[in-house]
Image (tube, rainbow, N blue to C red; front, side, top):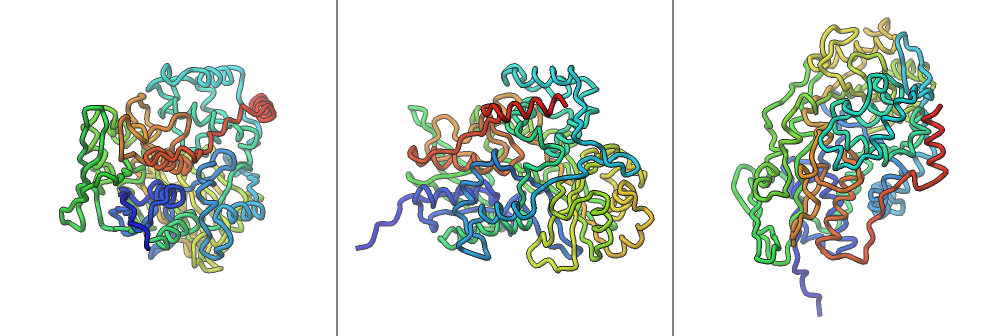
Length: 530
């Protein structure tokens, strides 16, 4: 006698880490058969914003993510049960732990000033007024802070400190971003205060995060029968509301390779909908071309949320996040080097071997440029004589110090010129350029989740009365947690699956509170007073 087929199917919109995590939790903790899970993704590849690949001209990643030991409890929970692709007896979590034990982060050149002077990053530069302003923000309720900006809470001196330069470049904050989000970050990562100048709390993957995290999760899901449907865009969702206030998703409207289609949701089916995209409309440049800044929402990353937002007053307000490209954009770049010359010069300047130094920020750079040199190989199949560097600039509209044009208008070669100028290596430019390819990427919405907002602009993961649908991704509301982290997407996926399936016996890891530990609180106080 065979078991009866499981009645429930799950449809996950989007192929990013939130959907992949939700699919894993549905199988691992919810007992849903993999063949009943459909991941609907418009792009030909899964992973969403967690990318990493080889292009014809070189390697590229759009983002540089730094994981963290204490704060990333849900991510570690997931990765403990996902085996690596090279050894099924070793989990991805175990591989990360072992890699970081072998290559610990200890940045010796976190801040670099004019003339390639290594600044004393341990001197945070905070004065009494700065500390009082930080304390005021930390004690104010979010309801009082509201949609105010970071710059509304601090004096000019604070924004000139080493502390703010390191904090903002580690997490990509702009002065005009949400004060609520900064408060959450300060509380969530306060354990990093004493080690922010070395970034010793950073945890990195052996390869880039697409190869080290996304690919193993996808293989694990595929081995269990999960159905990845690429070339599928979900354009709308139908909902019904019953007399008692129960709400259900009843149909997904699709564009499948240019043809209209739909999935009707049965009584036992679930829908998990990823809202928005921080890498929507990302555009790539080259050595000879600057990336375009796309303002007209071409790739559809926001369309589903815009389509359903007006159907209920608690489905959020996407315009709060995608309505101001100039306050959300910045640009990253990846260097592919076929000679170790530049790598060796960076090692000499920084005192760090590749993979041990974390971010190096040029504090006086007009673009506020930062770079990081990963341990090689950083990509699957990367040859031994090829090396990479990743970097980004926060101020893309300011004129460069060495190329005389805004970063947004600079080609890859011109970005290399600017970087070499800040490294004091202009004399080696022709030699370095002959063996280096630079791929810049402009991202119009990369920090859109930091936009000033009200409490109603982001929907809850499971809206009130939702019986079979939940929202995923960076534009949902998870109290106390921080967006622009992999942890946020995975925690949201866990909330969605456990909540909809009624998995009350499965505990979601708590949010880490650094100040609950007296020793950590003392270390934080000592660091800010130094």
